[in-house]
Every structure is written in C-alpha cells, then in structure tokens.
Image (cartoon, rainbow over all chains, first blue to last red; front, top):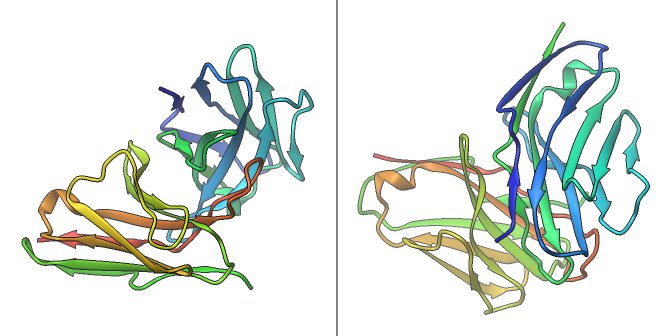
Length: 114
Length: 114
C-alpha cells in the first residue's frame, strides 16, 4: 500500500529565511501526482503546489518550489523568503493516476519567528 | 467565488446521539470526500462519493455512514456518537478528471462528543 511520510512534526524558521519541509512516499506505480497543501490556523486547507511524476522539472509557485527526486521517492517543499503568513500545517499528499483518492502525510507544523 | 461549505464550525454532542454533518459545494464537482483529521495522523478518509447515490468506503468507515442524494451535497452521519469520534471533520470535493485535479476543502467541523 502507498504511504506518505513527513518526518518533521514541527519546523521553525526566521522570517525572510528559507526552509525546506521533507516528504517521502512509497509506491510501485510509475504514474502519479504529488501535492503540498497548507492549513493555516483556523482556516481552510488550500493547495500550495503540485507535481506530475512524469515531469522531471520541479514545480515552482512564486516563493514555493519543490525538489522532486523520483528515484529516491522524495518530494520536499522549499519556502523562500518566509513570511509570517506562511505559518501553518503543511501536508504532503500522493495520488495515483487512476485513483481519485489522496494519501496524506501526518503533516509538519511550520512556525515563523519574527 | 467557488466554495465548499460545512453546516457547522463547532459541534458538541452527547454519547449515543445521532449526528449529521453536511457539506455543500457549488462547483459541480463529481467527487466529494469526508476526512477525519487528528494530530499526528494527518487526514484519514472516511468515505467518498464519485456520483449521486454512489459511495465508497475509505480507510476508517466504521461508525459512520454517508448520503449523497444531490450532486452538490454530501452528508456524514454518526449513527451513535462515541467519545472516540471527537475530531476535526473535513469535507472536500474535486472533479472527476485525473491528473493534477485538486481537492477543494471546506472550513472543517470540530466535533466534540461528551
């Protein structure tokens, strides 16, 4: 069965610095999709960034980028120039091409120090 | 502004009560999901529906049932609430298409069972 592991329950970073959140997954599939979602305190879960497994180029969305290492089954999220509004729980998720369901990691709580 | 809404943000019920959690989306999404979110466990899928009157069990369906009589509405039912069902419940919806389709989430319902 597919699993998603986020090994860092909590991370902290100084405002304006860069932080990387780790995510590893286990699958025997070759076609799949990976996602990072953000859940701010008392607010709705929103999509941060997503990546197709068949694309070698790493996805980027403004200050957010991923380091996708397919052979290592690793999908880390890098946040550059951290802002106070980035404080949230971050969840990594995996989905097979033929499936509607997402498999979720346990989440990483990101704290931004002013 | 497209959205997913949930009937209550906070709910307090007593053991043995029947509890209804409702979710409505206005995006004409085919798929709808109910998750349970607990600290350190990430999101666990309870049930999902890919069409009206269709439902599939997720990872933790025991003690729950669902109803989808209309495309826009997906209800989660706790037939006889128990204290171990105290949790945050998240509803999400998505299009049928595979690929990078994303989940859109509601604000969540924090249920306390006394």
